[in-house]
Image (tube, rainbow over all chains, first blue to last red; front, side, top):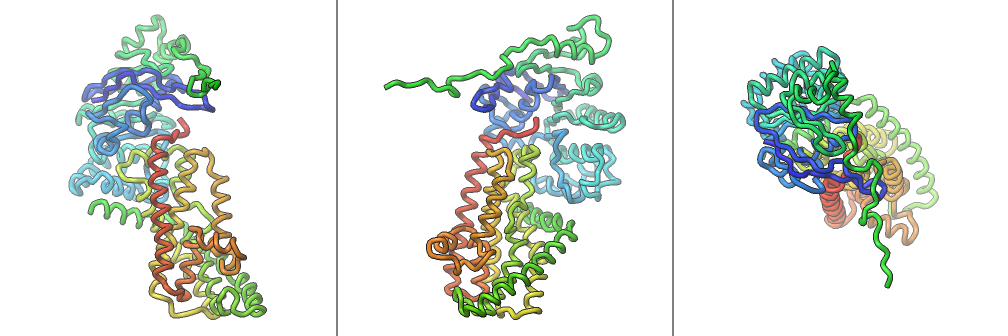
Length: 267
Length: 260
């Protein structure tokens, strides 16, 4: 369902080329629930952006739902749902319901199917009490449930979430988690999420990808991840140990490249 | 067809989004009216001393004054007004870029909704006040409505470019300040462009800013031929929107979405 081959993305920072994602190869099959871990700046969000067509890869390639995100962005948008925990796709000044209506028109969802899907999501995510509330008056937990709904109204095969539980309290987190688990189990939606919350990983993800310095540092189950660092009780300690002991595959300091430092030509 | 409904809905949302802030609109309308009265007295003094200046009669000059005060809201003379500007700064633009609808049409529909609301909330009050307190030129040329709408589209096209420039400049405040200054000065808001001297007048009258304020006001006052005024506006509308579309494509390739 998701496939990357030597995927990479560089950013130019003050003339120097900084690789955010270096060389990433992995595969996610249909129906999987995969968590993506990694320290801040490891390249998780950049990867998500390449998978959703927001950023064009510098090298390598990605395939999501059989489509090339960079070239077939619009076709892909109809088949995937995207949630960014720190961003919102909802209309700030308008009732939540209006944002959903816009999603319906945008993704050309049939009115009956939309109605049924919204009724279902409203029930499961308990949106009823605030469907008519302007988004600016919603709590973060309510807003996040609204954003997740907006991402799922067109019934995508793949759901990509970038830190969906960030800033949520224990109860709201629990609600979001159980909803995602249900979505994956009952509808078979493929889920890929990035997170810093190891509770998300332990409770949800059958498989973990650890991205570090723009490379895949680990790919396996939570149990296998624990086994990497024997003697550590909590998953937090295991991951902290892994983050701390990681050696940069790429130098942290920006490299000068031929592009940024053109050779002098003498005539 | 489905697309048309989408853009119609965006128009409605733009309208309703701005109608949320009624107090702001009323405060704006009040300010525009008060400054209209001030400007009117300055122009009256000027036209009494020099009748027929810039080809306007005294009544035409006063009409010009209150009309253009009424344009400040819909034409967004002081800039900004596009919701995706803040979204570039915050990084929320990422969502706008994954939508299966072009950002340009999306924000144009929304902006026309904004303009429609501000026409009611901020154009009518100063115009009515002007008509009651002074005398204004009536009846209005039938070409005024299309010219007014084209003025809004040109204003949108310009602000779209300025806003999108933030993708390259990281911070958009400098651009917006410069844009507001240019628009205010060259649109005819300060003085009718006919009063500008020599080459400055030529430049101002050929600029897209003239298409936002000076030209629709002249069309109201019955400028002949109307088709040439509308053609001028249409030229700038097409040019700016075309440039906007090109710049959007470039932004999509180049943009560094900020904030992680």
